Image 1 (cartoon, rainbow, N blue to C red):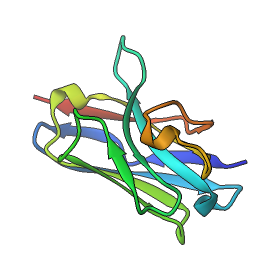
Image 2 (spheres, rainbow, N blue to C red; image 1 turned 60 degrees about the vertical axis):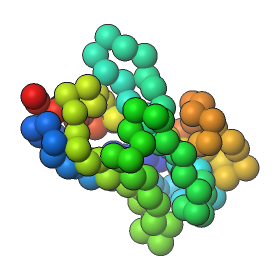
Image 3 (spheres, one colour; image 1 turned 90 degrees about the horizontal axis):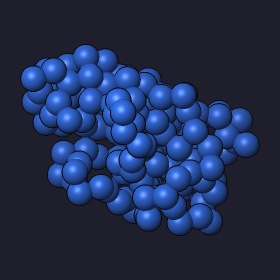
Length: 125
């Protein structure tokens, strides 16, 4: 079973960039697909981006396509979400999730099996 810890959130101005990290432990990270989700105040959690176990395939929500980039470094047991051109509507708690490499949620935007506790991103206008 994998444990996930997010980091890298903070307060930034609109147009800025942030890189979130998701450190994995307890299991071989290359055995898992990974996804990033977010939950804004008063809203449901929504899918942001997904990546397969090898890092070779990715999938994005339309709202972040061309601004965010998901990546995965299996040697470092760490996943990343590079966020550029941030907007106030990107303000949310960001969660990383993981599922078995045999799952398909990463490419469908469905919930994952394992979750971190989240990191807060606040974008001011």
